[in-house]
Length: 355
Image (cartoon, rainbow, N blue to C red; front, side, top):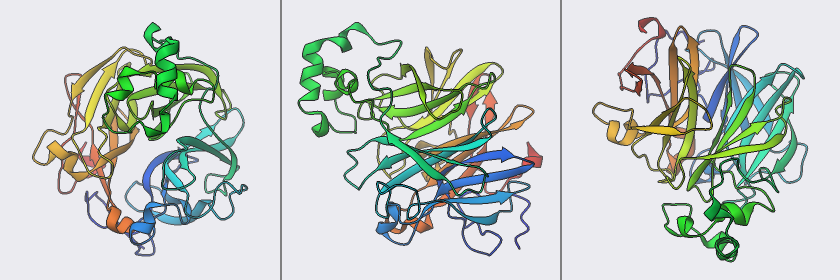
């Protein structure tokens, strides 16, 4: 059994069996007095960048010490032939739905490493440790336009230009995205979704936040009250800013966003923003990582921000190791504030009690 009393960012983090925790790109869920950590299960080498096993879950009483609770979502027993070893399952996020009593998991899904599906997978379970069974793989809000669509993106000529070469438009910073209307080209079949997260507001309404339009623009989509569907209401935020790795939290009535630029597995400078409404307008606040190493977010990329109560927040990020995926590390840091700006610093070791 482990007996940790502090976080050591970037170091090996053994579970109750002494094995490095295998829950990458994940999230936390507090339920029934326990804390559940869900994340991508990796295997050794570059082959571990694809889903060979599924989504792992760990359980804790204190955020430091984690019991291995097994595979919550198994790609070999998902309930669908669409999900199989060698597909892509990234950034799994889990919510408990109080209306239905179900645990609901969302994840970014691709059939293979070509990354042309840009879909979401949704799975449900009756218990937090699973097993989760697949409900659907889908695009988002087919037939609907965002509530704040600018008129130029409805232009048929722009839509046709993007539709003719949709799969050839890069997911990196590409001016082609702003010249056409990837948004309009995707309306009939639904919007692309790559890096994503979930957020539940104070009123219990849940939202899916995801990189869309070939990663050029972030979307916020309202979920139905069972968390399984989308209402058709969604908004574009950070247009043509090419954001990945979204994470959100709410503090003193304001919404905060921390994400990254689009550089694949390689780290880059984090980005932060604040808004009075989840739908925007958002004001960018720059890189929240302020000390040495912060120019590359200490080698990590955001995945989740956990509210701890009392105005305290835990920032979770991954240090990706694509050449040996199973060796990916975790960077957990406290969120500090300078005025209304969230700030990250990289201590060698810290504890919740120090906040």
